[in-house]
Image 1 (spheres, rainbow, N blue to C red):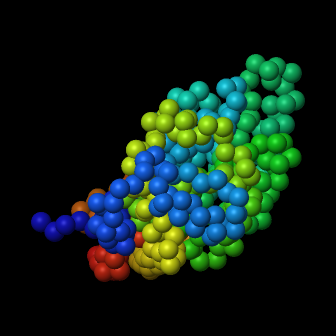
Image 2: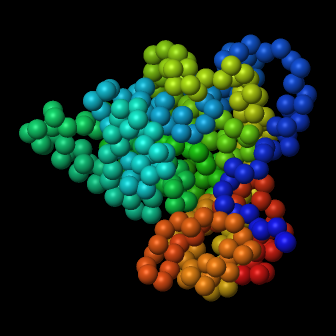
Image 3: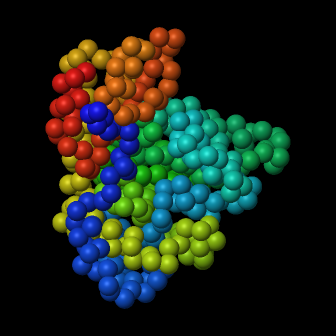
Length: 344
């Protein structure tokens, strides 16, 4: 039986060869624990430099859900919630992790995965103009992801507009960067890492989905890291004794632009995949410039595609059609994409 072509997600492969080689070279070294080692220090400095934010406070967390829950729960007061799009990862795909920490996710409409600043203002103003707002969940933070859950990207102007709303209402802006590398390397984007560091109060650089075995780097840009943050990481069960494992990976990822080079491969393969589907007459559900591609298929097309490839059924479009998601990664090979295009 021929092995199916795999496009289900961008974290199925292990890690970039450079990272694995670094583990082999250093495996018998003695390192201090809990992120106090030299690799974490080196990675933190490299991240500050590439972000153009010399005062940034950087910490490494074991996974994305842990990072989202930690950042949101430690920055909010007990009576506050976090605002996100209806399609936001924290609202739809984290098993209620934010609510589990005691904070409600307040949603605004999704526009291809993105937030509209005017609707953000409406939600905040509606809250404050309600005479009973003291009995309601206070808006305490704004959450966006870049790329979004639908593979779309914020422009610099769009993120600036959201940041201005947050500034006007004294709300921190948090950017989920689980796939940040793929956003940075997408064609036509005008939003840089230094822009994100300037506009956001906190964001994270995803490693799990961009070449690392595991781990994310959370970056506080305004001297605003919550008090005793390391202790709170540990309380949430997200502090690794072998903190150097994550630090070493990010140290390698941010040496010689490896993070961006790995991300570029995913974007090039996604573009090839997208062009292939369009050339074969398929309709795109979302026009995504990133490594997630959404295609509309009927039931017969779905059945045939399932025979040759592994992907995710995203959502039903109508009675006859569903949207399916194909994801490329830092490790996707050109021949894999070409083989899929050939047989669809």
